[in-house]
Length: 481
Image 1 (cartoon, helix red, strand yellow):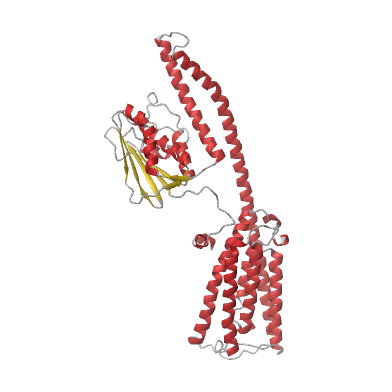
Image 2: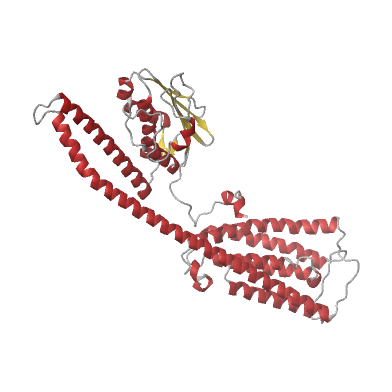
């Protein structure tokens, strides 16, 4: 069984996924073929004036029933056939399907005229499809057997060893063939099959190998990215340790545990403490972002988004109260549904945005949060009448270390990392974040900002499973055809 699997594809997940989805495609295509055969018989007899013998009519009518029967069996058993190289797997299922189809097609071709049959070109169709899935030597062998059986039928019919059939009414009169014509026809037929196998197999093999190379390269890039993030985490920890010690010592001095200090020294120490706070905040953001990229670990749970936002607002209550900000929250949803997402990451993102609004809104300012339904998800809109962001800088605000030019750096300290972390999280949660300025709460002197976050109801934490293919999802994707 292992010999059927190419060496380069044994442990290549995308190859097995392609085999499974193509098997499913063939099964659905076979239902269509059965309907077409039924239509061929019905239309031929009623509209095209085909005159079939009773034996032909019974045989041609019985073959679609056989195809339908084994197709239903294949459809039901497909999900139980795995993709393990050493056992019966989906590649063997492809081979079984192809052999059954070719036997049915050979019978149809025989009862519709063999060399005179309008259906013989479908052999070429099967060779091309088989070349996309099966190893070359298997398809070449099948092409050889098809050529041998087809040639035998033609020769046996010529010498009267077996019965001959023709679709009366398809041609104006009987078309007597010479032996030379039969031999030439068989030769061209065989060449057509083998050339199709060669081209199809060569192209598909090259595409699979190229895709495998690209995936290998991507894995190496991911490993390099992980190594980089680990290095960053290590360096940040080395820098953070002495900085934390400096922060603690300055804090002790300011609290006068080591004795009284002059006002001038106290002012300078407060500035130093503020700068160390800013630097520690920057380092923590770098650590947080690096860990997100490195671990890429996400867990999901059902979240009542309304209660979630209310709890988040409670955590920022003191900051809002200190600046006497008018903060309002409205749940405008018509359909109340929970959101399945990573609660910790979502809280980190929304908390960062809310903290930003609180920071850049003046005293007695205004912040408004609206919760509404979106297509297959929810939208959280946060607007304020803070300092706003210049229009030409809106595209840059999610860049790491970027701060808007209108920020008063003497009043509002920051690292420019917060929104970069937010965007990273929202995209990890398969959501979308947009920013607008001025906001709908804008005042003459303050443009304000509006953040709009859209989250899906169901966030998927796992990647596509090559052993599970949903029929409808697959068939609805045009790329699979």
